[in-house]
Image (cartoon, rainbow, N blue to C red; front, side):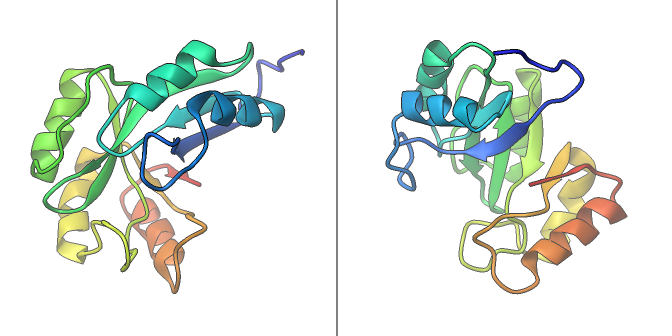
Length: 164
């Protein structure tokens, strides 16, 4: 397999069976991501890193696994990337962000404005945290209504990269 170093295909929010919302093994997730042409895949299981660590250990050549976690804070969900120790659930959003930064990680807001999941969906909470994060998930296939449009507006208004 030849990898074009000028291009990367990345998914920054993916789960394995280590989370309640996926049935696929970490090895299968990594294999399928590589088969579909991804070059980088962030495994962000809820409150644990074992799925990401297993995926990293079994990833095929050409696929970089980013170890991450979806963290439930008192304000809603955040995603941590490039961490090696789990961040406990139940912290305030600022405490969770600080814990990620202590590991040199990046922080993103997943599925903002999603009324049915653990989103930061309160405008005041999102506005106060936007300066503290690195990116916003601007497209999530499970959002209904204007959630994705509002996420794009949030990213643009705060000069943040939007990811899908």
